[in-house]
Length: 134
Image (cartoon, rainbow, N blue to C red; front, top):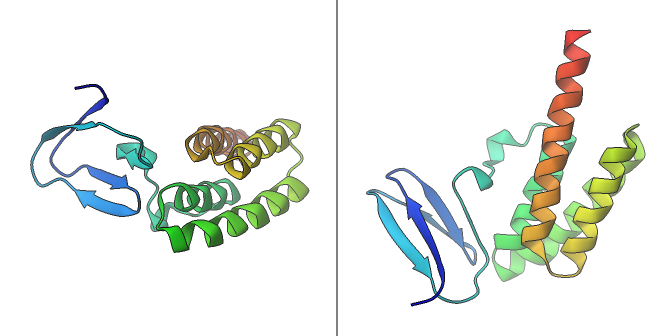
C-alpha cells in the first residue's frame, strides 16, 4: 500500500485533520491519502508561544491542522501576526521568510507555510542568542 509511513513512540502526538492523537504505545502508521497532519516536534504547544515568531508559527499551525472552523480564524490571526512582526523587525531575512510563509498559507499550502515559519523561529532564536551574548 502506498502512502507515508510514520513511526511514533509512546508519548508522541499526532494531529490529523484537527484531531489530536496521543500514542500510549509505540506504533507505526501509514497515511494512505491526503490529510493535514503534524507530528512530534512539528507540533507547538500553547505554552511555547512566547515570541512573535512562535505566535506566527502557532497561528499557521492551527490554520493548517485545526478544525474547519478554527482554520479561517487562525489564518486571520497569522496575517495579523505576520504584518506586526514584519513592521517591527529590522531583519530583511525575517521579512522575506514571513512573506513566503504567508504566501504559501494563502495558497493553501499550510505545510510549506510551516516550513518557512520554523525557519523564522530558528532565525529569531539566533538573533535573541546573539543579543544575549553581547
